[in-house]
Amino acid sequence: MLSALVVATLTSGLAHAKKAPKAPPAAIVGWHHEEGWKGDCYYPKDWAALGEGDRRAGRADALAAMKTQWTGGRDDGVNFDSNVVDDVETTLLGLPVKIEAVATKNLELCKAAMVSGDTGAWASWMGSLNGALNVGECNKPLAYTTFDYLDIGTGWQRPVSMCKGDVAHVFGTTSDRYRVSDKGEWMTIEGSKEAAIGNDWPCNIEGCTVGKLVGKFTGESGVELLFPIGAELTFQAPEPGVLMYTINDTTWYDNKWYSNGRIDDHAAVTIEPAGGLQ
Image (cartoon, rainbow, N blue to C red; front, side, top):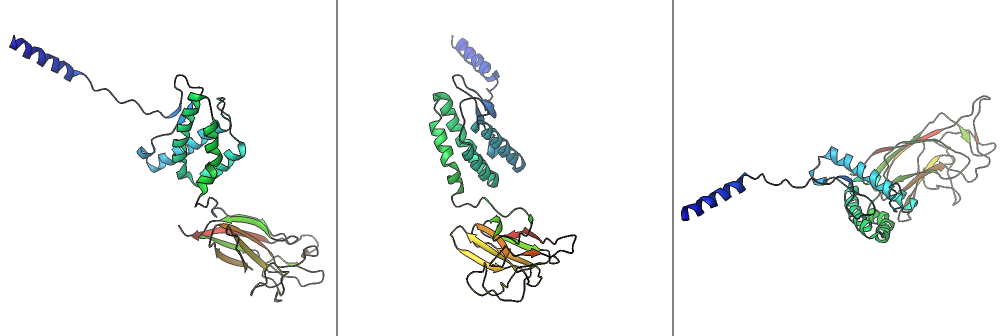
């Protein structure tokens, strides 16, 4: 009887040993619907398992999918304020690494809403998301070159956002002429030799002569920096803010471009990124 018990035990052990191990469930990626849910939720990829290239692609896919649902495109009762969605999208495009955490939290809130049918907590999170993403961040770096024609009939123009440490190279054409009074001298963006004295001028510090192209940087702290530009200048932002330019003048109605009778001059101004702090 003992031999029979041993044989039975060994046979049972071999039978168990021959069973293939159960494969772990495949990770859910993309839109998924559980029984009882009122709609689908988007499952992002496993970020930690991706290489950098796949990770970037996964972020783009997740943001596009989330925006589709946030704006009512899934026909599941979810439809958040379009201005809120646009602000969040703009921020995440500037800070794509944060898409990973947002997609993970979004899935958690989506699942809860699809079970309960109540999107209140999800909407509340969306409403405060852009502010939370921007804490301590500058999401508008100087990343693109801007080109425009100088308007001599108005004041500060062409606002360009910069982050702390961004470096802007500002330059313009110096062959185009204009004057800033009816009978004044013809000049270029390098200005005249006449000093701008008094508080009425956009820039009255040293180097900001009459008619010269000048710049202003307004930081998020509210501090303004004024400086001459002329033909060109390289400027580094001390904090997040906005860079603008104008010609140094006190009146605009009497300004006039030089004309040879057929073609009027029009100076072009370019602002391009020139490196910066990383």
